[in-house]
Length: 408
Image (cartoon, rainbow, N blue to C red; front, side):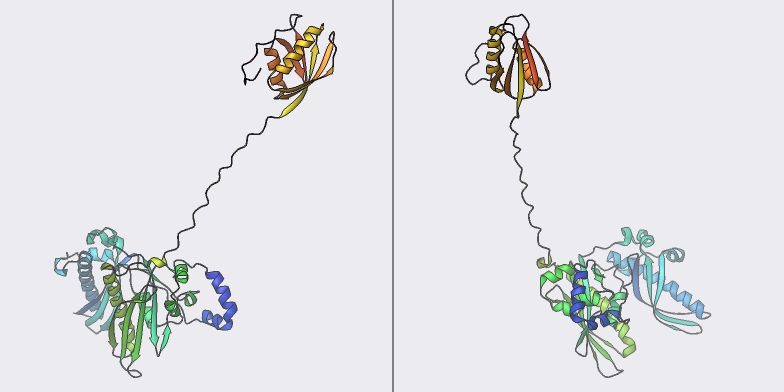
């Protein structure tokens, strides 16, 4: 399964539109798809050979499984601690029964009172951890690596397009104890289109970036010496988008029945090759697979807040006076009051009410307060301000303001 399928829906639409029925047939075939086993919760030791007798076949098998549990735990402890098996502790059978998850029969021969078998023992990771002395039974893992198993038979390369023994061997391979964090594809869905033998020949990094973080690929060539006869397989481990060779080896099976076991052994030895390469620093991530850095964010433009100009309002000033001096002083106050830009008489009546139109930067309340500070009695409503003298005499003019100062 791919951890990320970037652009998969779009690529599928374009591919199906271009290739038509051939791709439809490939995706619809039932001879595809092997789901990898989930080994995240178990620890496995395989290849334990037992040869034991008993009063009957069931007793012999039971005794053989007991022996496999004991040997399996000691072998697992030695593997986890990188120590000789002779140093491993012996656990009682009741404890082993509690931490063993299952027995995997790789090969067995059952007689009336004898049991010969090659067995694998699966231990529950959480329950076995305290006895192994390793918290959770965890191992240090590599970065996630996409695994592409390729079989070359008769000159034809096959990955997950059709079920094959090499894909099955990797699907059944238990990866929980491997230092390589394999990402294994099942062959279902769009896997045959996105992860296939042709993909390993594409040098373009852009396509790789859309599929993987990092991948480890396996390539195997199988040669049948003659139909039904021995099968010889050449295994080659490759890594990276440029198919760098990590290592290789050759295995031989006696006949077709031995091919699955040969493939399983090949997967195990390939894992050893990848693990050794990781430990020696030869599985370094190709920096060209890194996604390019995102473009820098545009600089935030701070808009200058322009202070709106003061609004100029028009108000009517009504001057209530009983002589011309009060009117003249009132006009002098209006022409020298800060904020008033113009004062235009509309009706002059020195012995009654005179009307003056003024333009003022501010509200009517501010204008009334400014006139009140000059000694006038003021009241206002709407846009009309009425002023009169409290003493019957004109209020005194304020002293001249310094140059540049604003009059109030």
